[in-house]
Amino acid sequence: MAGKISRRERREQTALWRYQLIRDAIDEELTPKQRGQVVRQIAASSHAGLNGGTVKVSRGTIDRWVSAWRAGGFEALQPKQTACVSRTPVEVLELAASLKRERPERTCAQICRIITRMTGDSPSESTLLRHFRRLGLPMIHQEVHGRFEADFNNEIWVGDFLHGPVIGGRKTYLAAFLDDHSRYCVAARWALSEDVCRLSIALKPGLLAWGVPVNCYLDNGSAFRDDQLARACARLGVRLIHSAPYKPEGRGKIERFFNTVTSQFLVEIDPDGKTGIGTRVDSVDQLDRLFHAWVETVYHASINTTTGQTPLERWNAGWARQKPRRVDPGRISEAFLWEATRTVTRNATVQLLNNTYQVDPLLTGRKIQLVYDPYDMTGPLAVFVDDKPAGVATLVLISRHAHPRAEKALRDEQPDRSTGPATGIDYLRLIEDTHKARITAAGINYTNLEQDPLP
Image (cartoon, rainbow, N blue to C red):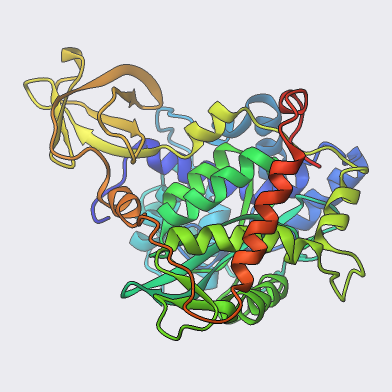
């Protein structure tokens, strides 16, 4: 969206960048010696900056961020709102020099904008100009590649979209997440678009069922780069990693999974019953139900040639070594809320997608942040001013019940019109029937409902 971002959003983006940089150093299982080695490695490496390019961060700064995280979590990584001082911190000058060294064509004004985006404040252009004139630093380029072979369950979840068949005149897409260690499909959902709404709808149930992963490795598509997804991962303590363009290292497992889906599942689909061969599918809802039955009955029970185990066996065995990292369901739901910045009118109201909301009259003329559920904009919205709660916004006049993107996701849920194939063996319906019979035979264990839902 065009326009300036709020100070709250800028601080959250900076905190997210800092968190992703120090994530390896805040592992509680590290010894002090191991942590020191990790910090030195981070300080010696170049890192992707918020506005492009690469930057280097001193060890002292990294130690300070690690201490802040351990003391106050994600919020403690946000830049503090302090009055400007006359002396520019050494770390900021080092950062400015790194940005200039990476791309000599960057102007002082551009570097000021980048530093402001990252830290919330910046020295003046004249200060940077004098500093650059005094420096004679060599050009340093260091390419960093992450490790994409997980050692345990929930260390890395790899996510992507698969393009599926055309059903009812609409293209379908599968949003799926695979556990890198076990190849277990932890989250998946078919939809009629590939955006952050569909991605969140697929991901959220997986987080609730299987715990929160340490890392989430995604492509560079717009859905994976959305600010709402980045905030959700940061709030849950998930390190969000994006593969470099044209360098998809570590994405082989999800690609092989998609090849299996295409060759074993989609090959049996008869969209809209056009061929009369295979399983007739008239809606994305039917496609999704058949897919999950296939995953549980066939894919999870098939031996992987690399591991020598089925995904289910490897997944179950992995929990003997460590427990999943659980997060309160309410916190997961809160992490997936959206945010918008608005200015309060003289009537103590704000507009959000043509809806009118009433806020505290004391906020008249001020910029506020509205935190809301994109699927239900009728209830009171939480209000914040500079990161501090400031009451709620009450609906006065409604035009939309949901955000347009969320509305579209809900509208895409089509009714079930299954009629079955005209001829031949309905392989996927057999799998679905087997899956239903297995669930029915197992019954409901009310004791287990109070325990972890993991196998």
